[in-house]
Image (tube, rainbow, N blue to C red; front, side, top):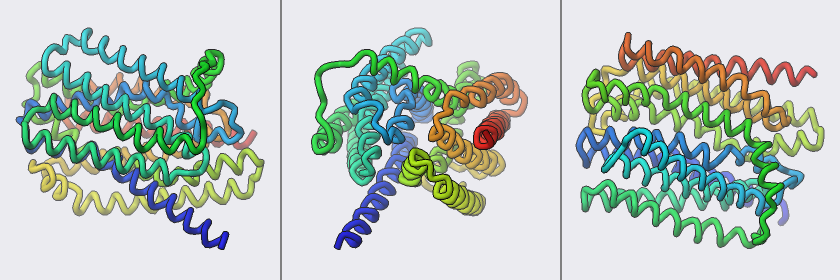
Length: 413
């Protein structure tokens, strides 16, 4: 009976993790699809750019603590430390979003859309700290349920509100309220079975956690900036009237599968936690076997994605978004390849984090970030949309090669 119960538990964890991860992959795709079909090209461009800003600033809210939290097998920090640290980082996220809007002179409609999307993404960051706790206790089924229910309700609420009212601002307010309600129902409520939240705040633990996670945060912030750099460049070109309205939306549509590719790695989160357990027990044989198995799974998934993208990728995206994208075939395949490279680099980064050498990751991220800043703008001005694609794939290659080199050097010590 115990074996049967354990198998059922493992199946539940896998299924809900898949559902939660899939819904996370779908939400940005569906939201942009609805906006592009219901609103004007200009409004779609505003939403696309604002969502990119939200993705950038949520790295401040998350502070990349999830990677550390989910592999904190020995419970160096208590949940209250993670929770109060997350409140601090979320406050910083919202404050910086206001400063960004002010400094960028994004007044009126555009500024409000940016801020509301940042507020919505802030609720994602709050939910994430609970999901990290569930993962730490090997209960990704609960985390998956939270993600799935919240994402589905957000999609439903946003779609109904936007279709019925044609008001983007109102629709964003609605999903912020839905997200907060879901955190109470699907994160806070089940968390009481695992931990209690003490009111006493340990400032030393918060500072210690911020210090230990800072290299991961810096890496994450720089990485998302690298992802967003093409969009920032296109926004600059659009503001100078060098590209027409709609190009930002089209590029974001082409870029959507990149985030979905990266989410493949999230399906493997239970194995990452298991790798951390093997490492803490110094079980090198089991660690090496699982590492090889993970690498093989990623390789096979990557080949399948490349084939599917080549044959059906653009036709499906054109059908879903109602925009003819066939002339972007080369751009699209290069972006897909760059996304696959980034998935392998993320995998290597997690291995480096497990062996607690995450401070070294600053090197590949800084080098990739500098290269992206140096080349993407000039490539875009010279070659257009495909130029920003070249810049993206070069930055991804630099990230992967440097991260892999660091991991191999640390393993040989």
